[in-house]
Image: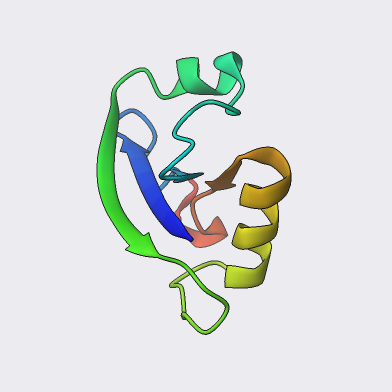
Length: 80
């Protein structure tokens, strides 16, 4: 699945993953408002064999298929 990952300057290390073909179609409006200064961080092909820095690719794929998005929160040690 081709994935687009977006970031926001307002919330460090918070990322929104979406299926690149669907875009924001299934992302709740309330969540998109939190990303008011949204910027494309990267795009990539996501599959189960890919290693992600902070997330299990199976969980990300499942969330994308079920909800249309995956929200990656900052690691606990970076939240202060």
